[in-house]
Amino acid sequence: MTTLRQLRYFAAVAQTGSATRAAALLNVSQPSISAAIRELEADFGQTLFFRRQAQGLELTPFGTEKVREAREILARVEAMSHRDGKGPRNRLVLGYFATLGPTWVPGIAAHLGARLPDTELDLRESDLEGIARFLAAGVIDCALSYDVGLPPGTDRAVLTELSPQAILPAGHPLAAREAVSLAELAACDFILIDLPLSREFLMVPFWQRGLSPRVRLKTRSIEMARRMVAAGLGVSLLVTPADGEDAAHNRLIVHRPLRDEMPSQRLVFAHVSAPPPNPALTAAAVAIRDYFAIGATGR
Image (tube, rainbow, N blue to C red; front, side, top):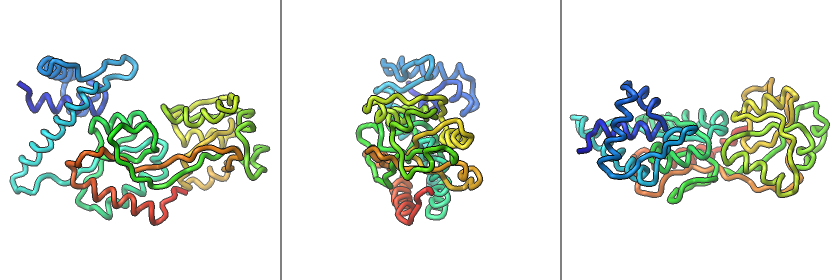
């Protein structure tokens, strides 16, 4: 017989992608987490997680379906536990693509705090593949993401569109030009954002033109990429604009448009299309669209 304890452990593993991290989150032993998952899989007669040595535990399609049911059950139990009949304080879990965080998430969090003071905001950072997994599994209610790799059945509201720009050291010869070409960038030492789906979006236009950028360094952090460029280690191609806060640092780099045609990238507010069990989701969607409508450009 399935227990609430098993469902809590299951939901925690789906959230963290690891029995060890789930145990730390719930302050229980890792063997008890693993045992609960094995018991559930035995009860259901199907596998809930793919075991990937390098990437940890990833939900199977069956596991994705079941974790949604588990979260709905746990939410109903939590609501019933409040004797005043008002239920728990609204909680919204917002996922965001890591490179978007410094530019937009602090402002969004402040805006939501002012517009929805009774809603507790929980933030989850990941790469684009992780955001897609979180949405599909119900780990997050909604996401700030590029419109890349999102799961089927995802509703999107386009917040803005961004064009890739060349990022150059201020003293670089190309910095004197009004615009630069991909061929010119490919001939320079290149700093690559090494995140799933992001690197493909940035590299495919080079490859389509028969170009192979001279990648000198890779990083998963957009801020690290900018600082590497500022230090004169190479040039880069980025979509996410700088947050504009580090004025001294920003004086060391310049942004230039591309002469080549490249697709723009849509920045979206995304959530699953099914009727949301979270009452804060609709209000948050409106608030975030309003935030961008009043000029939240990130620059």
